[in-house]
Length: 286
Image 1 (spheres, rainbow, N blue to C red):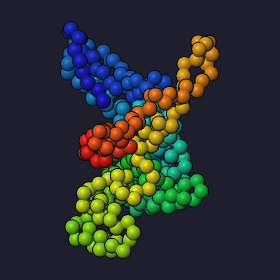
Image 2 (cartoon, rainbow, N blue to C red):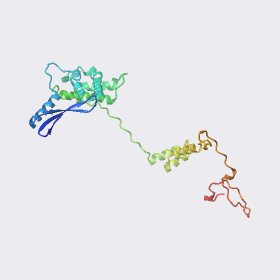
Image 3 (cartoon, rainbow, N blue to C red):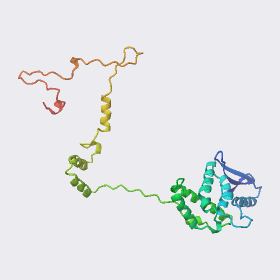
């Protein structure tokens, strides 16, 4: 791709030169085109034609493997990273050339590509297993891009890779289905003899979470946290600051007990209720 810019009274043609294989940054070349814009446009068209290339002058058929190795890969190395170029070369040498690299470009048909993709999908792996759909699609992209370049160089009339599609459709996700009232009634009727039927019925009618329903196995996360906190050992600050040993907390005196003694009223009844019932003050139980 080339475009023209003007700086003061001079024109320049900027040509895209791919990516630097070391830094990964884009490279652009500046071509001075003089003071005439028409000459700059001619230079830009000439640069784009040279980038696409022209048909080879030698006779004889051009095979797909030969075109990939000698023409397409060297051009791609100037436009992609070094790791991507290595992956393209590895796929061409191991997947494309052993199967259809001997086929001339003008005799290549969509059937050749379909057979290649089927072979890669079933037995193209290292241990005779099939390749992933993404890998097969990358091979298809390489063949399609190379045939696009062959069309620009007038080696083929059409790109047969456009008539094939190597991407497999991913399985669609199943939409979760909720029970209807009839389904729930059928379930409750079948679960009636079960020993946890009251819990199932309560959960179905109130929308209670599974961990909160009666009869659920194991304590909830809140109960586990509360139990772990209550079971934490009591640590008293040591008398010597330099000592890190924990000392047991002193025993609570009997005078600090929360249970108040019973006292008899003049009528013979209890003057104050017992603290054994925690709901005495609120509900008046005795």
